[in-house]
Image (tube, rainbow, N blue to C red; front, side, top):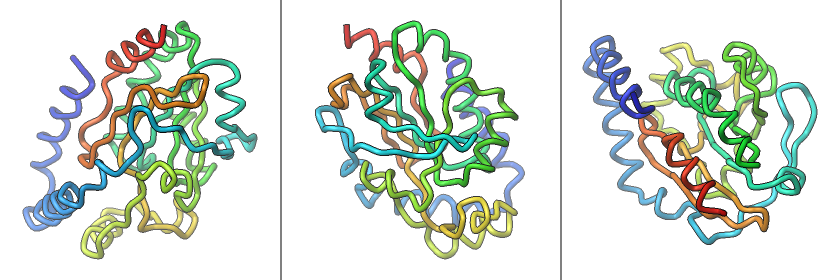
Length: 215
């Protein structure tokens, strides 16, 4: 089963558990985000990847320059450990981690959650790649991915117990669009997946194909 088939199955099961009025808020918010055109304004193939230095889950730091010094980088942005779709996507990337590194690439995941939350996520899923904290979503903004939740959806997330005020260290409204980039050693984006629909993610097979295309 592909990752997106697994995500679709989860979505359909999840919908049955969510009240109709909440589903409508989620649907409307998702449509407004799609209609905003933000995905089209995000960085794309041929753009130079903005440099960053971000903390890891264990208190170290990683810079894009250091990562690129070792080879191409697979950079994926996710919403947080509270998002079940993100967890499924990160688990799928972990399952393909060895095949990614076998191609000489480094895989890193970035979210706006604080390092403690990233550490919990790393341990929960036994992730072998770095999970970085982009507090305030400054890096996501540079990539054109950051957006603010509308009031009604933010209220829904609060009622669901996601507690973004805590996990995002006082930046509860700002999240990144789900996105994955393959960046070559010169710092140029060679493959990109950006989608306003958080239930759809980059397929690991497509990431591998993009790495193979780098030669």
